[in-house]
Amino acid sequence: MIPAPFSAVPSVPYPRPAVDGKALRDACGAFATGVTVITAATGVSGRAEGTTVNSFTSVSLDPPLVLFCLHRQSRLEPVLRESGGFVVNFLTHHQQELAWAFAGRDTARVEEVPHHRTPEGLPVLQDALGHLVCRLDSEYDGGDHLIVLGEVVELGVPEPESGTAAAPLIFYRGSMRSLPGTE
Ligand SMILES: Cc1cc2nc3c(=O)[nH]c(=O)nc-3n(C[C@H](O)[C@H](O)[C@H](O)COP(=O)(O)O)c2cc1C
Image (cartoon, rainbow, N blue to C red; front, side, top):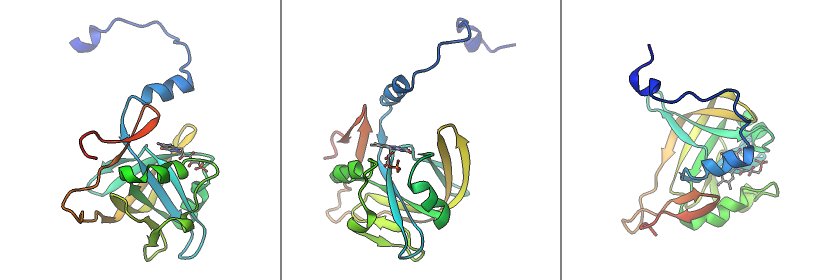
């Protein structure tokens, strides 16, 4: 027996027309998110890469797990696999230029962006709102993306100097902006 709320939904004929990728992207653009740059590097002085990602989400507190989705052709993916870890850098609204720089095929180079390295060599971007250092836990099939699950092993949330936290960078309907009222 279907519970009342579901039985009240009118039946929809199948099959439905295929969902268009661009339409799906536009629809999902109505869901506002924060913006991160995921960084990884192969060893302390090895190849480092960063990619702008808004598919980040926290998953579990115990154990501490987070995830993001990465398209399968990403140049970050082999570096991620080799390094076995990554850093989630939460961007402030001052870092919009940086976010776009890490969002193209002709991407910014981590070496040219102010950062420091964790003891295992993972790049932590300077002036971010906060960061999570993660051990690569597992990867799952997500269609044309990989669902990357990481265990948080260290976190950093810098104390704001003025007592007022910096405003986050928001991605909404294809453009980046600050959260109204927090500039
Ligand atoms: C706001 C924003 C969010 C993005 N989020 C993701 C994401 O969650 N996963 C992803 O694979 N690419 C995402 N991208 C696209 C990547 O940043 C872009 O494909 C990448 O930097 C280009 O280099 P790569 O393809 O070698 O990784 C996003 C781009 C922007 C501007």
